[in-house]
Length: 139
Ligand SMILES: NC(=O)c1ccc[n+]([C@@H]2O[C@H](COP(=O)([O-])OP(=O)(O)OC[C@H]3O[C@@H](n4cnc5c(N)ncnc54)[C@H](O)[C@@H]3O)[C@@H](O)[C@H]2O)c1
Image (cartoon, rainbow, N blue to C red; front, side):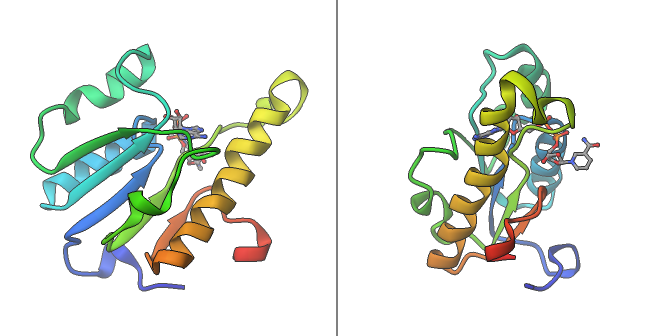
């Protein structure tokens, strides 16, 4: 496990997935406050009402680089180049979507996307932290 990023010196460049979400947007804000350049990845943008509210405080901030991408399918390695840390917060939270009509999307966004991200982080040697936890094979 890499060093706790909260105990480390200020990061020069970080990737945050789920950056348009509740936790991700707050983390992006905190990193920008610390002077970190942030590659902010999410499959939603400001056209989504909930994402718009989360993203509003970030627009126009120095060092803020939003990328709209779906981690289930996008090329991930280019997003991670030169990253000092990767914070993986993209996913579908909650229990109810884990069965029924959204099950396939839930599995793909929470497990497949996490596996893809961790594989890319391993390949690029980018230190990565994840919630949800990575699949057992990469934990
Ligand atoms: N909110 C909490 O209290 C809490 C507590 C513990 C753990 N968590 C976990 O932390 C993570 C973030 O939670 P949150 O409350 O910020 O959720 P959120 O729904 O607000 O944010 C998640 C973001 O991930 C994005 N996303 C989902 N699938 C994606 C994909 N395939 N590609 C790119 N982006 C994708 C969504 O568009 C969304 O903006 C989740 O894994 C959640 O389970 C949340």
